[in-house]
Length: 445
Ligand SMILES: Cc1cc2nc3c(=O)[nH]c(=O)nc-3n(C[C@H](O)[C@H](O)[C@H](O)COP(=O)(O)OP(=O)(O)OC[C@H]3O[C@@H](n4cnc5c(N)ncnc54)[C@H](O)[C@@H]3O)c2cc1C
Image: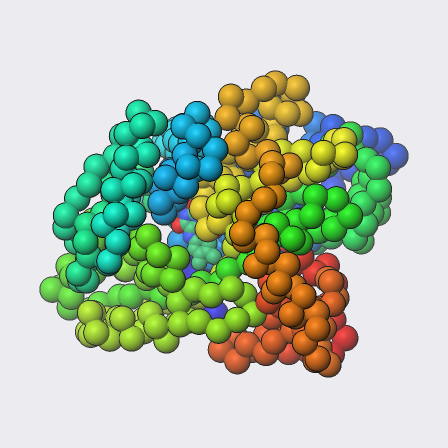
């Protein structure tokens, strides 16, 4: 099932590492970026702008992972995160998180002045159907931080809410139209999969690459030896449908003039793309059950009975312990190894933040907000216990199909015909072909 972005924009192709014109036999790049999703591509773009000698390698084709299945809202409003950051880390760090994401939004706005990618400024809203107190707590946090937000009673959605927190002048775009222009002069090798890492080396299916610095931008990090990412992250899957209407009045009803998301992570999200309404939701931990497309279709049947489903797709993202991405040194004891992951379904701005921080790190420059994203920050969080329990249960579950990543039991996902791992979110086709990492190889079925 292809997303609206895949269907409406083709991306350029790049040769593999063995055919790459800049291939350097036994010479070192300054930076090797592993993974050609938005995070890797923005890192490559910023490195190129800074004059750094880099190569990006992508196992398959660029943006073939989660980036082609996003809903592409560009915002510093990441559900109700500011109240949580403020409570856990204090006002200074909450401000850093806000400023980093606003800076990313500005970067997109500047780039999109010369890239035709349906970039539009839109207000962003986080609504609640039953928790006004949570909204007020978020507003209080933003007030303490000295950053702007407003409470609104009504939102243009066909459901009852108790109000919403509004961030003005955020944005939405077509992610693949954006990438298509951005990658034109970047140094990229496709169909080049990293199979093994050594000190400053990466062994690929097209030979060994040497680099002083390596950035892991593979969505879920694929090196287990360091960083404990298998304990401090899991993946959450969600579903999208694009609704279209033929009659004028129904088309008008689909226009919601903003970007909306429920404060509850089991709730729904809304944005328009042209005359369509993109509905997101049905979320669940990968490998578990949830509302899936059925929940969205039920909602559409009730509230937009004349609209038709023009596209449907699904994706998953990495969820961190505290809702903040992991961007920076891969682990305390690694040198020249960096990571950009854990975007918690807010990867548009987070990928730009990652590109800024990691480019500065390579240039040995400090980024004012880098410490809030430090991957080695404390792991003390109740979610850690949940992740550990989930892994233990799945390791002990008897099953003939086990994930090659860490041996957890795989569960059959009948809606998408895949074998899914509830521990870390790896997915395989019925025949065992790898769909999503952190597993790195196909599975014998
Ligand atoms: C349903 C849904 C809706 C979302 N909507 C929004 C939104 O509105 N706004 C927002 O900000 N965020 C949103 N997100 C989040 C956002 O889409 C993601 O965070 C982002 O796309 C992740 O980008 P990435 O580059 O980290 O990963 P990916 O796009 O998955 O890229 C990783 C790449 O690494 C490659 N790779 C993996 N292993 C190797 C290897 N060994 N060697 C070489 N290459 C390798 C893969 O092939 C892949 O191309 C949404 C997420 C979901 C699930």
